[in-house]
Amino acid sequence: MSDSAVADLTDAADTLHDARERVAEVGSDRLERVADGHAAFVRTLDRHEDEATGYGEFEKYVGFQEAVADRLSDLPDDLPARGAFDAADEALQQQTLSTTDFDRAREALAPAAEYAALYEEWTAARERYREARSAVHGRRRALEERIDDLDRLVRLGGADLDAPTHRLRDPVAAYESAVREAFGSFRREASARDLLAFVETTEQYPLVPYDRPPERLREFVAGGAGTEPIPRLLEYADYSRSKLDHYVESPRELKAAVGTNQTYLDGLTADPLVVSWPPPPGERLRYRCEELLACVSRFADDDVAARLRAVRALPRETDYATLRESAVARADLTPEERERLASGSVESDLAAAREELERIEAALADHPPLSDLADV
Image (tube, rainbow, N blue to C red; front, side):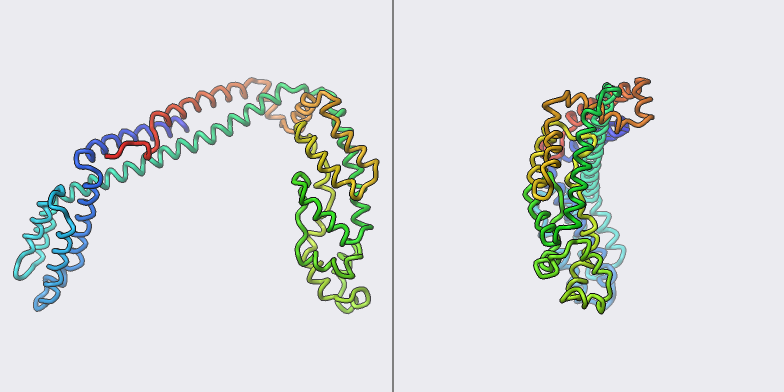
């Protein structure tokens, strides 16, 4: 695909070069003036032909001649093909006009039309060049992503799949089990007000990604019903209003605040508090554990915190990078990828992608952006 994109860019560059050489003989600004003048003159002819050639339409005839004069006054005397505009005007200087006169005027504009065609060709060549270069850029981005993916596969292919990854897995799993149990108890037993207050405190910890509670829900739990736990409020939200009258003071407010936010409340789980498997790189694990400790200690006992500190110590007390790489390889490599690694096709694909990227880079260097090209 890149060879095709490079070929398109090369061809577009050749076309642009040829057009630039011809445009340079005139000057792009002057050429544009001719093209604009030609287009305006032709529009004037097309707009007025029917009415200016009619009998007894003197006012329209005069209006047409004034329009032609306005078009001519806009054109500098030294403009290329200026004589073509004058010749067209001369063809129209008749006491009465016929379609033949308009045809002669259009024929007289032929030299200006050639300049206008050159300007359109140059504009089209520039746009094609821009699009071709953009396509090569897009191919470069795709190649860079592919090379990153293949590099990752090669790296994972070198991992020891028989490494004792349980040295990482066991502490991570033990902490996950403990924090899920502790959060489950917290959710069941704590007041909705306290639970949402805990969620709000996590805003200062970017690596503990709870969503901020909706404003209406926060305002509701600030009242008397906020002393109830979340599961109880969700149960109330399913009651009829007449039944709710026996449990809360404001059934309508509960329905509006809790019922409409049931998806959010159902989503308040321990998920943001667990350590992923495979675990993150060592430095990120340390930062995440520090933030988790600050949050977990607000509702869990010392045993949960101790298990989390054991996870935090893994990069220091184990060959963490090697074991993590093995864990990632086990989790991420598909049977097909393992087969490709064993056959050597991944390495050959990587080499081919890097060679292709070199050709892409060379093409982009040989064909700079339009903004870097000298004016003509």
